[in-house]
Image (cartoon, rainbow, N blue to C red; front, side, top):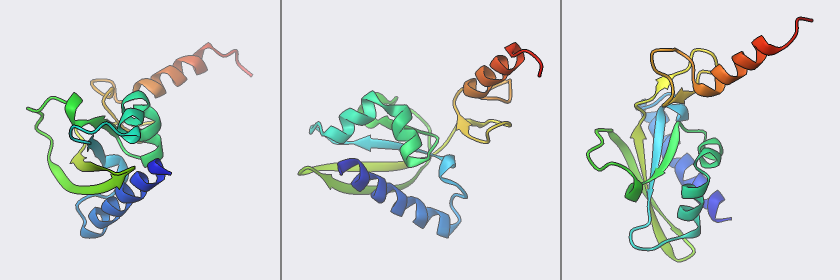
Length: 133
């Protein structure tokens, strides 16, 4: 239930950004969470299951403010707050700095000189290993 509450808060913030024209897709953003000195279930889940949170929120990525480089030059597009089990969780919506994969169209940090993410590269390598039909 806590994760759904956080997801709803993130989705509401993303809808506002979409309507204003600041973003076209939720895949264009990175979400950072901050619980201050309080450690909540949601923050622990984000830390353990970043990829699952990324998929649940349908964003480029998720992180905790305490675990990110403070000198990061990402643009904060919006901020939001919600209460989870009595603790305030601050949510920052940041502009993604990741490249866009040409195959799956996801923004991913692994896209670099090769225009594909690591997930697609692995899938294409597996396809090459398959015997012809």
